[in-house]
Amino acid sequence: MAESETTKKIDVYLRRLAGALQGLPEEQARDIAEELRGHLVDKISALESSAMWSGGAAGVDAVFARLGTPEEIARQYVELNGGQAERVQVAATIRPPLRMWRGLLRCVRLGLAGLLVLVGSLSGYFVALSLICCALLRPLHPHSAGLWKIPDAADDLSLSLRMGFGSVPPGSRDLLGVWIVPIGIIAGLGLFFLTVQFGRWRLRDFFSQRRARAVAAF
Amino acid sequence: MEMAEKWEVQVRRGSLELAILAALWDGELYGLEILRTLAANCALVVPEGTIYPLLSRLKSEGLVSSAWEEGEAGHPRKYYKLTANGRRRALQMARFWRSFSANLAGMLEPLDKEER
Image (cartoon, rainbow over all chains, first blue to last red; front, side, top):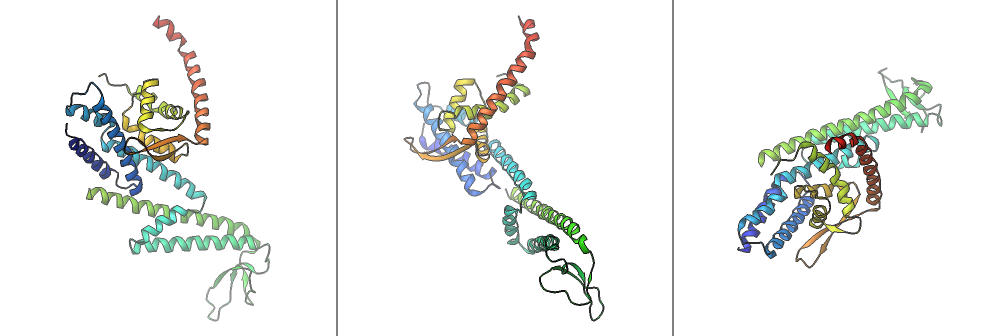
């Protein structure tokens, strides 16, 4: 049997695999294809050197059949990848999500909506962090850290969250007193959690849209 | 060929992970060698393609590590070996498996009389 024909079959199989593996990082997809190519080459050459081999294409086809269709294998790899993403998401609720930032930055490159999500997330983290800092600094700066109402020339409502570095303008009123400590910590953590949720929600939306587009194109 | 029952398939799939870790106990192997070990030792006949995604999961869980090696085959092969974590996990799974199957065997004793 012509060797080139077997090689062609392997190439067709791996092309189908590559198509089904879209959505996985390119490097990983290449790695998988190389490993399966090795498997097919090894099995076919073992077959060809065995005494039982008659030279027909049926034996070669059986090697492909035993491996499973490229779509089946790809599905298992992609499912596995989904499992990983879930684990990462669980970690993201505990630690500030580095991976999520990378995702957000990728999302920004795709347009204004992404930029808004990034700005929204940044503001969320900033305010959350400020609240927590303010609460933690209150014991150190009891007369200046807190949420202050600051008098304004036009007598507008003007609030200021202060860490206690620098003095408070005269006539200001401390709105929360020591309550800034529990309220600041709880509100800060709450906002932090909400911001993480918001980012994850937007990212998931973004990626599911992109996957849908990839599938449509395929 | 008789279609395997759903339960049989599940048992096989569930034990495949332990069987792979056990196959790697004595040293590194590439995918096809692992498949041959499984087929030779415990008749764990699985669609061959399932082992590769599973190896990739074991790797992402840190139980095995892999390295491409240029061999006499003329093409590189991806060799897998157990990490320290993988060895620990394999021992743990083996312990569980033994006590679990011993308990189940105890439960199956009444059925044995029927069989005889």
